[in-house]
Amino acid sequence: MMESMNEPTRPHPSQRRYPPELRERAVRMVLERIELTGERQGAISRVAGQLGIGPESLRHWVRQAQIATSAALAPTNDAMMRADVSSKFTTSNDIARQLRC
Image (cartoon, rainbow, N blue to C red; front, top):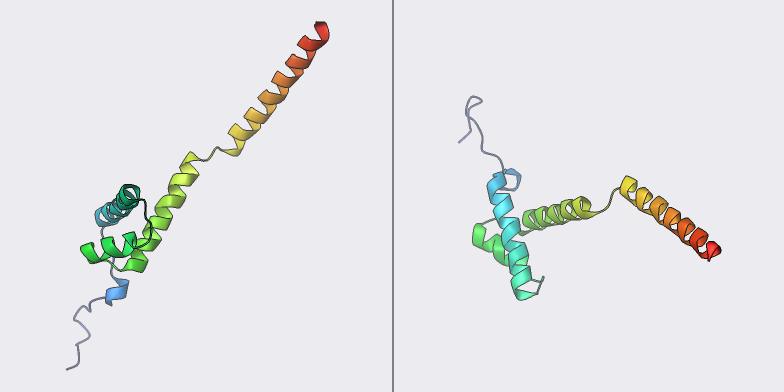
């Protein structure tokens, strides 16, 4: 039977969108399982199966979360430059102090 042009079509299952709350919960479950068991292998597949999510989608979300977390924790270029400059000043002060002794 042909669908009429006015009827909305459902997206293909591989193209459906998951709510952000489900994504966050799934990522949290994977990271907690890895922390609890110490094993990375199988954590994504197990959680994906429990929640009815495609494992590759979940793998992508976990990867994105890990990148976002590491970017948030990484020092900025400005902070690194300030630390570098302050260490040079500290070194110069130390040298001047040693020359006075």
